[in-house]
Every structure is written in structure tokens, then in C-alpha cells.
Image 1 (tube, rainbow, N blue to C red):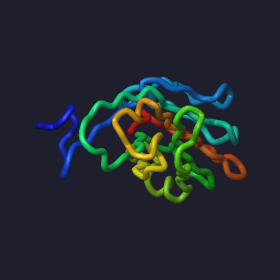
Image 2 (image 1 turned 135 degrees about the horizontal axis):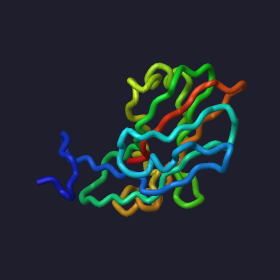
Image 3 (image 1 turned 30 degrees about the vertical axis):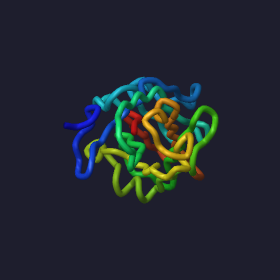
Image 4 (image 1 turned 45 degrees about the vertical axis):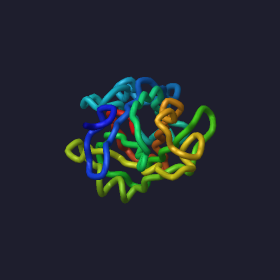
Length: 173
């Protein structure tokens, strides 16, 4: 039997938790259809672009993860794609407990994003390994930690803005 409904994988179980709420920056730096990122992935995408510059963001909150046993790996997962190739912009993920940023932000480079996520046919999970204890609210992962977390995504303009949309379906772990 799998504990708590997790999906059986080699050596244990995998659990997913998806944002049930969240927010985005104020117009004109907001993501369109931001509420599409709440709940499990369903093929409905929120989108934003790189043209405005700094302070464009979207974040997910309200993670409810119930499980038991020892947590051995934690990843932030975002079903994601770009409309077209980037010239020099990138995407940064941050993790927060309240107003406190945990660990070190993860920036996905232009090359990485272009090689893996261009076009709807290449939509798949953008994955960030946050297993390290510096990302846990109390220094070691427990099942109660997830309700405290906010996953924050920022498209980052470098120089002139790339004429491109970033599309995301959900924000999860």
C-alpha cells in the first residue's frame, strides 16, 4: 500500500501539491489569466511577457500536502513553455516562507529555456531541486512545511525586451 495516496516510484512514493491560490504583480506587470495557475495542471495557461522589465511576477500559495514518512527529495515543478525563442532574457524562481526568502534563487538561462521549452509542443515541467535544507522553513523538510511556502516566478528582462510570452499552467511541488 502507498501511504497517503502518493504515487509509487522506485524506492518510495511521490506526492504532488499544487497552489490553490496566489497573486500576480499589479497591471501592467501582471500575468494574464493568473488564476489558471491555481489547482492541478489542466491545459489552461497564465501568460506574461518580458517587455515591462523588472517587477513582473506570479506566485503560488495554499499548498496542502498530506503524507507520511521521511521526505527525501523536494522539487518545485511548473508546467511551462515559451511562445518563441528568447534573445537574452531568463526566468528566475524564488521560494518564500512569509516574507523570508529561503535558499538561493534559481535562474534558468536563455540557452536552457530555448533548448527545452520553445513552443506549446515542448510544454513540460520546469523543475527546480529544492531538497537542500536551506530551502526548508525550519532546516529539515516535514509534511507541514508546504502550507507555509510561496513559489515565486519572475521573467527577467536583460537589455532590450524579447518579444515573447511565458506560459505556465500550475505552480507546484
